Amino acid sequence: MANADTELYQLNRPLVWSGFKQLAPISIFVTAFGAAFGLAATQAGLSDSTIVVMSTLVFAGAAQFAALDLWGTQIPFFTVMITVFAINARHLLMGATLYPWLRHLSPAKRYGVMLVASDANWAMSMQAFSRGQPGLGLLLGGGLALWFFWVFGTWLGIYFGNAVSDPKSLGLDMVMGCFLLAMVVGGEKNLRMLVIWAIAAISSLLAYWYLPENSHVIVGALAGGVAGTVWGTQDNER
Image (cartoon, rainbow, N blue to C red; front, top):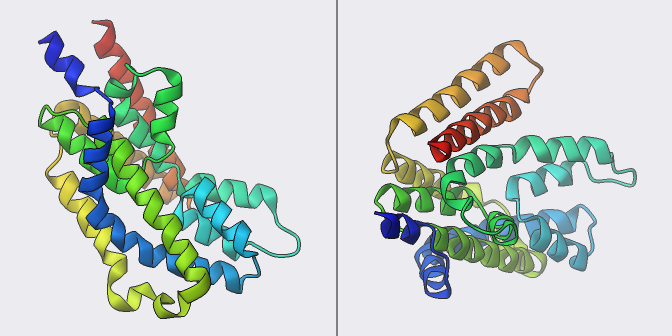
């Protein structure tokens, strides 16, 4: 049993390469959004090098588009920071659900893997764990595939962006959402996951009704993240 548990949090080159290949097909669709961002950033007045560096280091599509809306001669740093945090707050919940397996890695590997965590590779890794298979290779390898095609798409958008200036008109905006829904529906089903998602959902709804606009994203993610971390810690102490 101990050996089986150890295999679940294995992370080596073959597993990472396998994860890259599994996510590569869906990652191709990310190229279109990267191209749309490259074009939009060019139109916002950013230099080519700045655009590519932003996509390379930030790797957060929705947050990058939101930052463009606030871009100007006087950049409101605090507002940009809060906006980006709110959009990416769901990563707190992702980290909590992955905690039982990530905790076995060294801090350097743990946070290195999470640098490329996104919706699609998170969903596929959780599905692998629910089947009793190692999922960290999917998380890292799949994340690298998504990151590569996002950066590549950004570069394409700088030079050929007019061809994909409106990916929604092609229905490409639905691809990732449908993929993520399919992964979650077929993912792990147990009391821990049910409680985490229930706490996140209820907290988010309460915040949506009673707190300032858009705060429900942060509140839901924080509540679910805390629940997942506490539950995981208790299980490990038993």
